[in-house]
Length: 362
Image 1 (cartoon, rainbow, N blue to C red):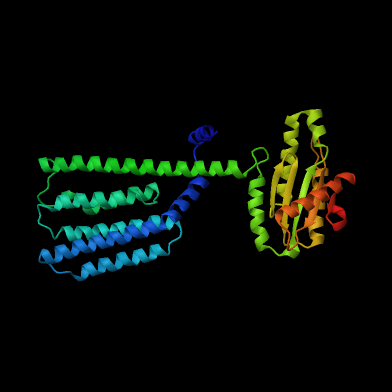
Image 2 (cartoon, rainbow, N blue to C red):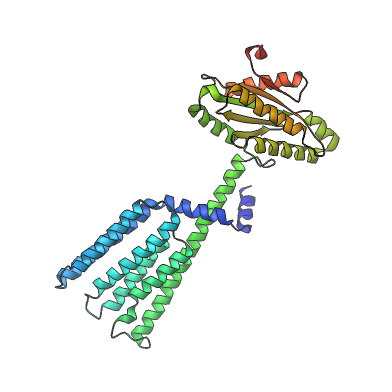
């Protein structure tokens, strides 16, 4: 089963809305990690700046303080950033600032050491960005900005056609190709895993035939509502398709499936603001809240009418058992009461609803 789902995910391209959801989810899950990377980057740069400033017999100037102030400010902004799209821009600005700051430090080194440190600094920056939750355009923009600020051929004695220059070019091509490949593969793998988890969750909580929530989904959501909703305004409705076995016996299971899908669609259309599900077979359930008794009865009566008057081939009717969920009722108790009311609706002639009362259960 897992292999079948996996193959389905591999064949299908993730839709744009799922990609957008993935980007936001990826950023939210790595938000703390992004802040850590910013902080560590500032700390490492400050350490190297201090080493070069004092051991290299240079001063720790106001320019260094300005860079630190800007980078710390960007990190504070990141702490309050909640949208992935905003992080793409913020990260690009941070990289532009820190690569300029790195160039400032490297210019304090002996000229013979500068090309190697420029390449090392640029490679470190790009590797760090490759593991952050940035979109493709943002990553390649960082790639361009990094090498504009840290390319080794800005050093006076570096020439492209000399041995040292050619060696640096070969290394840059290798390291950039490796980082870009790793970034794209990691990004694709993370999107694939997110897509697969969504499909598996749908398989677990959505009824495959009717494409509405299943029993597992309903029980989890209804339990949450029971803890939050006012006991005076919550109701449970059990629904059963009348004479469904005759439909299957007379017209076949394919038509039975059509009837199930159509009934589910009617429930979804008329009860969209509430929790509903297919419990199994021809049984459905709805959890309603925020209604008084008259409104709850009106909603289920309207659903009966909607199904009855649906002008389609192989029309059916439904019976509904409705109960108010009392303060001390568990979800299981409510389901039992609704089922008892449904039984009464069936025996009273079907195509109707019955409200549970004490005498119904006798």
